[in-house]
Amino acid sequence: MNRTDEYIYYNELYDLYGNLLNEREQEIYHLFYEEDLSLQEIAENRNVSKSAIGNAITTINKKLDGYEEKLAFLKKMHSLKEVVLEVADDRLKEKILKIINND
Image (tube, rainbow, N blue to C red):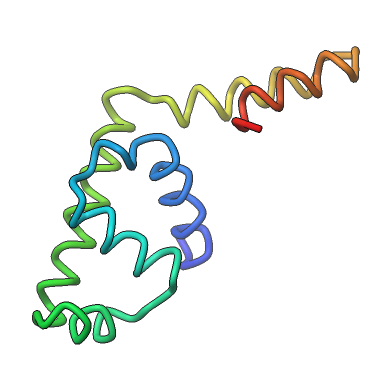
């Protein structure tokens, strides 16, 4: 998985499961994936080592992967989107996609 695909994947997982992470994990996730700060920048801001932040990112990703493995909401959402695209009624398709995308 390239870096862009990784970012998209973990952002999708975070949208679904981010509230299950503790406050510290949410903050580190936000700084790394959403603010695009480097491990070193985050470490300096938090007065910890770069490896501590790297370990935290690994732990966060493992947690998000674990939630998806158990609950499979992202997989189900992607499958549902594929089915919705086959719906002939454009108004109905639009309404369903808004629900799926939380719009």
